[in-house]
Image 1: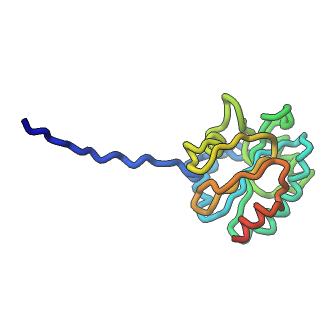
Image 2 (image 1 turned 90 degrees about the vertical axis):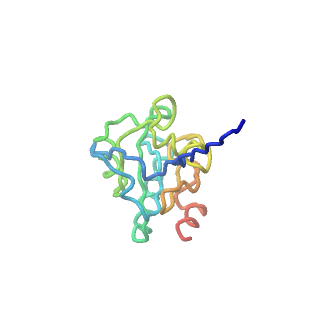
Length: 173
């Protein structure tokens, strides 16, 4: 009896990257994250009625300082913690502009935890999807660092300010 061994090549499993996602901007338009190829991106979940809301000031300053060095901040308003972002997208947009002069892109309000967690945040928080680490969004203003190739690099906790050594070192290297 002769046994014949048949080998079937396995399809390489595609690990999704940041660039595979399309989100909605604060005006409701589709925003493909693939348009950000070649940029370092800081993803931050925001809220207008949080003790950490003043971080918008330093986020805007950081954005302006490093924007010319292929850096972008993307804000994702979320009402996921203590109902600290109750407003509509239009109200959030106005709040950010009037109170903090925010010019970095703001996206539509999403959920960053729970059953209705946005798919991008599932990717950001799940090692099986992002290939780097598991994390949990613990509060408003948690920051995720994405490199120029769309890979998750690290996470910065909410209370750590935008000008933390971790973020500045990442931006300068």
